[in-house]
Length: 197
Ligand code: ATP
Ligand code: MG
Image 1 (cartoon, rainbow, N blue to C red):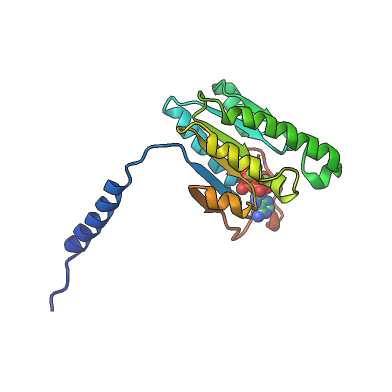
Image 2: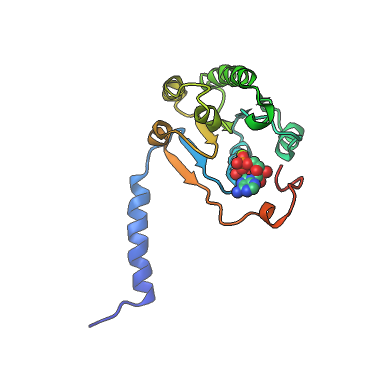
């Protein structure tokens, strides 16, 4: 019996990977979902947007929930880019405790989003915390799916939120679930500027 050398094993692995790379030839915008209870969804979305802008492409952001405090990402993108950035909500739903106002904010955010989904000049669209509007049933999923399907072919859409509706998961191209294996908050560390927001 001959055992393969490390070099032979690596060559075989390279052949498999090269074959996969050769098969992936399509170039188009994709839908990325970033979900789960762990920390890292919005920061991943904004990191990807930064990567996109670094290549001279265009982007826009709609935040479906307004945080309590001005975020570092908003300040950064405002200072160094001129991309459209819409902050639509009023805060977290358990804080506002005003369902009618939350629904009105969700509808307004969707109106803005719809326009961006038809805008050929936008290469990447970040829809931060959009998932909660489905969770609370503030908007139906069908028109959102239809608009995603009709968007410009080159446009990538990134949606964040803890829980995503099944229909969206089914349609999306890339789905990442960020798992909570620990969080500093539970150790008594407060939300800190530059780390949490
Ligand atoms: P980030 O913006 O840091 O990438 P996120 O988008 O994954 O976080 P959200 O669900 O949007 O997280 O929550 C918003 C805020 O709550 C962030 O400040 C985040 O750091 C914090 N957070 C996220 N996950 C947890 C958790 N498991 N426990 C406590 N706080 C969390
Ligand atoms: Mg987030």
